[in-house]
Image 1 (cartoon, helix red, strand yellow):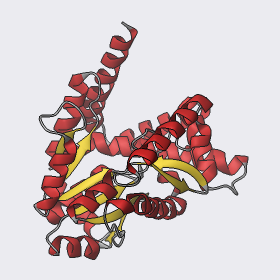
Image 2: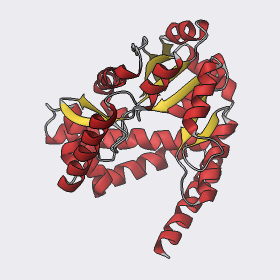
Image 3: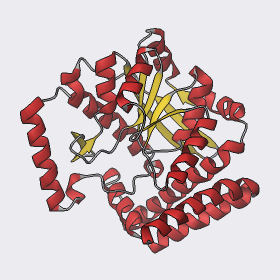
Image 4: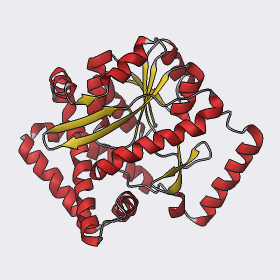
Length: 318
C-alpha cells in the first residue's frame, strides 16, 4: 500500500510540475525552485549526503565550507534542470535550437561521423540539461533514439514518454518493449542514425570496471559495444549550464576497434567525462552511490564474483 501511495504521489507531483510551472511567471518559478534546492541543501538528506561524497572526489582540495557551497550550487543546477524540463513542452523549440546552435562546440565531429554513413553514438554523463541538448540535436540532424527505464507507476512512465516524444526524440523502453532495445539501437545506427545514451553509471554485473577520479567504479558497456558492433562513431558529449543558457561539447570520436576493446573505450569515455565534470562540477547531478568503495561490502563482493565469472567465461567480447 505504501509503495502504491508513493507512486501515486510521484505521479501527482510530476503532473503538477508540468501543469503549474508553465503557468507561473518564469522569475517566480526560478525563485521557487531555487528555494527548494536551498532547503534540500540545509536538510541534507541521504541523496544530498551522497552528492557531497561524490563531489568530494571531483574537487578533493575543497574544504568543508567550499564543499557546502558546491553542494548547494549543484542542487540549484539540478532544480534548474527540472524547471526547464517542466517548461520545455510549452517553449518554442526552434528558438531553443537557435539559441543553442552557437553554443555547441565540436559540431564538426558529429557531422563527420554522419558523413561516413555509419551513424553516431553520443554518450553523456548526468550533467547539465540533456533534454535541451536533445532539442538542439533534433534541430541539427533530425530525430535520434534513446532508451528509457520503465518507471512506476506506468502512467508516470507514459507521461515521460509523451514529454520526450513531443521534443522529437524516439524513445525505446529498456524493458517490456516489442523488441530488445539493443537490436533497435543497432538498426538505427546501421541506417546512419544517432543514438544518445547516458554513460556514467552501471553498478551491475553488466557494467565495465573503470577508474574515475582515481577510484574504481563501473560504467555501461552499451555505448562502446554498440559502436564496436555497428561501426558507428563513439562521441563523448559534455553538458553544463551557463548564467544565461547552456554549454555543450561534442568531443572527437573514441576509438573502438572491435568488441575486445569495449573496456578500453569505456575507460576513455570515463576520462573525457571526468575532464568535463571537473570543469563544471556543480552541474553533475549524481546523487546516487557511484564508486565501489561506497557500496556495502556484501554488494562489492557480489559484483567482484559476477565480474570474475564474466571474465572467465567471455573475456572482453561483450
